[in-house]
Every structure is written in C-alpha cells, then in structure tokens.
Amino acid sequence: MPAPTCASCHAARAALRRPRSGQALCGTCFCAAFEAEVLHTVLAGRLLPPGAVVAVGASGGKDSTVLAHVLRELAPRLGVSLRLVAVDEGIGGYRDAALAAVQRQAARWELPLTIVAYADLFGGWTMDAVARSTAGSGRSRACCTFCGVLRRRALEEGARLVGATHIVTGHNADDMAETVLMNFLRGDTGRLARGGGLGSPGEGGALPRCRPLQFASQKEVVLYAHFRRLDYFSEECVYAPEAFRGYARDLLK
Ligand code: SF4
Image (cartoon, rainbow, N blue to C red; front, side, top):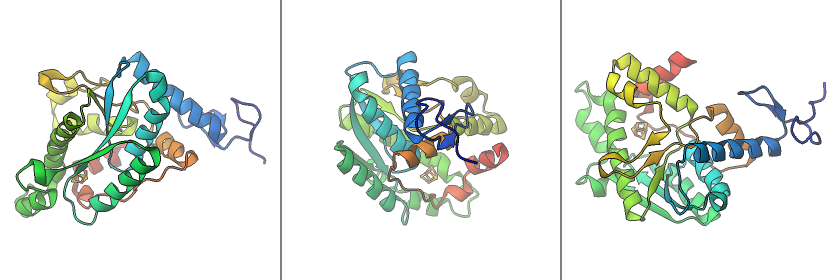
C-alpha cells in the first residue's frame, strides 16, 4: 500500500506518523512542526528573552545536538545568541569521542564552543577517579549522582565564562518522566515538589535554566535528528549501566 500524502503540505508522501498525534507527515513538514513547537515552548514560557546570551549544554548526544540545531534555526526570531558549552567529566573511552562530535557541530554551525573539565574545576578529580574511589564501597552505583551534581556546577561555570545570561539543556519528555519516577521511588518529596516546571528562574545567584525540548518525546527527537541528518554521538557512558535512571527507564517501557 503506498504511503499516504502528508497531512500538512498535501503534496509530498508522508514519511512518518507522529507518535504524539498520529498525524502522517513528510520529513520537511515534521521538522517544521517540531521547530514551531519548540518556539512555542520558549515564547509561551518566556524562557529566553530577546538579547539573551544562551549557553547550550552540549554533550554530543542526540538531545543536545537537536536542541542546538533547533535553537540555531530559531535564534534570529528569538533575538538570542548561542554559545556551546561542553563538560569533560574525565571518562576514559567515552567522553573524548563525544567531545569530538561537539567540536564537529561547533565548526559546522559556526558556533563558539567552550569546554570545561572536572579535573580543572574540582582539584584534579575526574569521574574515573570518583568511580575508582567509590568502587567496592557500595557507593559506586551512585556515580551518576555525583556526576549530576558536578556537571550542574561545571555547566554553570562554563556558562559564566562565556558571558551567558541563560542556560538551556536538552532534557526531553522521556527524561522528565524518568526523573519524576526516580524521585518517587526514592521518596524524594522535596524534588517532586520542585520539579515539573520548564526550568529554574536562577535562584541563589545561579543563571536561569530551562529545557526547551521538555514536551518533545525521545522518539520525535530521534526522528528530527534523522530528517535533519544531524551528526551525533550515540554510545552510552561506561557508567550508565549502573545508573538508577536505567531502572526507572525500564519501568516506563
Ligand atoms: Fe555522568 Fe552518569 Fe551521565 Fe556517565 S551516565 S556522564 S557518569 S551522569
């Protein structure tokens, strides 16, 4: 059976059925709709005011790659300028390849890139050193908890270094659902009560943070990267199999 005609342009053949709506669209119309929805998220939430200098937390993975690409498309309409900020956690056999992907993106998109390293910021500590020091102590499963705290701090430092006024991260709707479930399973009522917004307004002197892809599903992020032919790094961090997040992800399948 031939593919149906795109429900938006009524000219091209549909290339996908949108997971969120069931609408059959061609790749071009899907990407345009995806970008329009991110624009709506940013404008309706008043996340990035005109004139903002936006630090994009860039990991080389699909989410931050899609976020940087979409914001680059939207930047003239939003009146913002972008800086890529990548964090080198010091994870052998993983982060070097991911950072190489960020460097290729920065060169292709002509965006300034700054890389900040845990080793420089935290007295020589890398994630590999943290993992070694916690191995066998029962805390090694918590690598990602340590890493999450350090990365938040490192991204803040990197953003300040480049003169950013705002920070954006590539968390998508699936990430948000996993976070809610993780906090529920841990009984962390404080985080459950704080979560759910589009970001944080910058309390305690921190820069405002937001998640423009928060309403986009993982499937649609992957589809956008596919149709825009984005080059991203897709291998998993060596510590990810131990992460509690993986447990929450499995429960949501
Ligand atoms: Fe850090 Fe865990 Fe992510 Fe690896 S999987 S980069 S250790 S948070």
